[in-house]
Structures are given as structure tokens and as C-alpha cells.
Amino acid sequence: MSFGEAKKDLCAGVFFSLLSLLCIFVVNKYGIDIPKANYQAGSAAVLPDFFPNMICWSTFFFSLGLVLVSLIAMRSAQASDLSGASGEAKPEEQEAGEKASKAKTVAFRMAGMGTMFLLYYVVDFLGIVVAGFLFYLLYAGFTGERRLLRALVGATITTLILYYFFVKVAAVPMPLGLLSEIL
Image 1 (tube, rainbow, N blue to C red):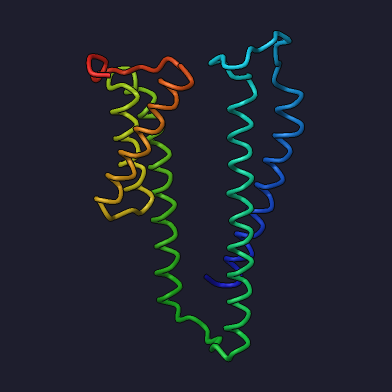
Image 2: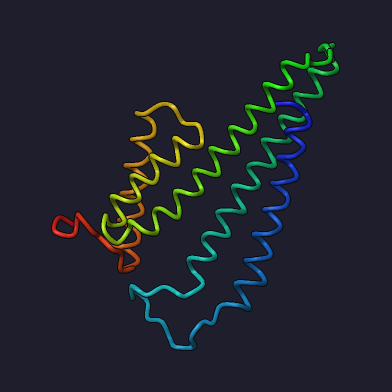
């Protein structure tokens, strides 16, 4: 990773860390109405701000991880620059190839985002489990994952964890579609 890329990652990490803290301590605190009813210990109900806060705290810690990784990358990039790494200019052909590669990456990521709209339309018929599994595979392919076994394992684990958590633990009604007889 070059120094410039690490610097961009550092800025993104700091931005998302601050944004998540803003959401936790301002938006979620003042924007989510919490009923004044007494919640009994051991009840299955969770407060309405639980899931938004969980997402914000996760974002905060992942952003801090990005900050740390980018600081380490910046330090190693500086060390390699000081050790005499050549700063030769890139040939024009190489620069054109990099621009084409970046355009291809952007196009694939946009197609990956488009699969989210596709998911919206097929989730009622296929169900959240099958649609989520297929969405994970499609999105992994569009974002550059070429190892099919890794994508299959990731899709299976992620889908099962999300199904179990939202349907069994949080008791959120989900469309089960094709698997409604089994699940």
C-alpha cells in the first residue's frame, strides 16, 4: 500500500469513527423514542435503540481498526521511501492500465450495489435465507472474490448467523419463501 492510499484510508477511518460516535451519542440518543415502560429482567424484548447502537459501535471499532492499519501502512511506506526505493515515473501504458482497472472495479462495485435492488424484488418469493445466500455470492463476485469455496463458506455462515439471530433471537418476522416448510 502506498503512502497516499494509506492516508486516504486513515481519513476514511477517522471520518467513520467520528460519524459513528455522532450517531451513538446524538442521533440515537435523541432520535429514538424509548418507551418509559419497565422492562422485566429476562424478557425477550430489547430496547428500540439496541440494534442501531450495536451497528454504530461495530462501525466505530472497525473504523478504529482501519485507522490503526493505515497508520502502520503509512509508517512502512515512509520507511521504504527512506531506504531508497526508486521514485521512477510510471510509463504511460502502465498508467492507462491502472485507469482501466479502476474503471472496471468501479463498474463491478456499482453492479454489486445493483444486486441489492434485485434482492428487494426476489426476497418475498425466495425467502431471506435463499436470497441472502445468493446475494452474498453475487456481491462477492462483483467485488472481486474469485475463490468460490471461500465465497460459499462465507455465504453459508453469514446467512445462517443472520437467520438465527433475527428470526430466533430477536423474533423479527422474515419472509422464508421457498424454505418456509423446512424452517
